[in-house]
Image (tube, rainbow, N blue to C red; front, top):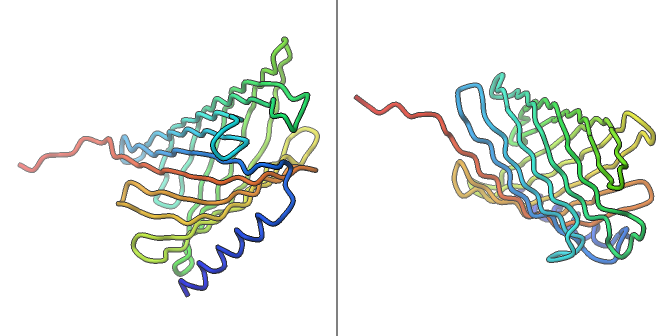
Length: 228
């Protein structure tokens, strides 16, 4: 079963690379995600993403995001957060696109469940986006996002991860984008894991292929009670 799943993962990657893209170069996203527990019910989300038009160069976007998580239970988490996104839109294949800076507020709800060895995560997110395009041009946009993620353990250390996420705008155009992702991950311990994957980022009339390297680092900042 493990060999079959790994085979499907590799075939999916190969097929994805064979499709036409919206640019000639393969880009990359280098990412960090953290959940920092501060109490039994609260944790702090920390995140940084460095996105490039090419694998090791031609900067595209910096995304910094943080939020306060309320753990309703082990299977339900509510989040209120803020993000800053700085975008360099001057890639040579897209003339006329300019730099922008965005401040973003988001509300999020996560539900988790398991079916056999398959772990499912449903993420619902609403975003309020305040975008500065420069030259005194500003815009406020709103959108919703839904992501379904599936994780399958291969053994105690290795696992497969896949998700699909759709973005729906609350203004025209209604369809924003869709992200399809496949990855192979490794757990180093209960707090640290690494994922190497592929993302197909689809916009209307434009597609992007992206390698993704993600580091997940979870910490427990609660004070430990020393034994008496």
